[in-house]
Image 1: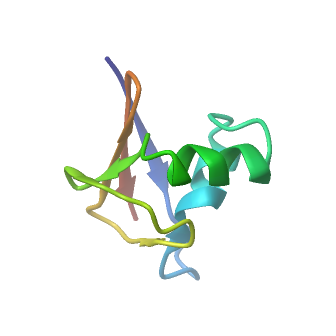
Image 2 (image 1 turned 60 degrees about the vertical axis):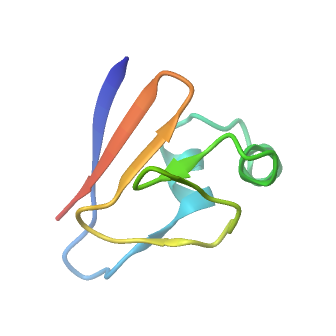
Image 3 (image 1 turned 180 degrees about the vertical axis):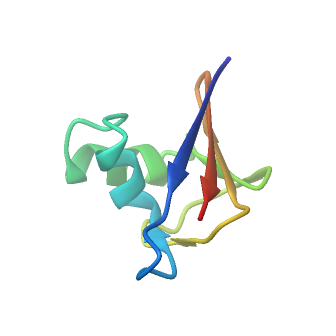
Length: 73
């Protein structure tokens, strides 16, 4: 399993789930990111997440396939 982190800029409070998937180049496009979430392929903090615009904050853990991403400050 691949472990990764995403650091939120100090000026930002959160990042939306689909934006994280695009920035980390897990999804090829915004549409692909939305489909991944809608299909139930993503979990946040151990629970399946279907909200595309879920606000991820420091301490959240996103998992999909063989990737785990920790959100940090």
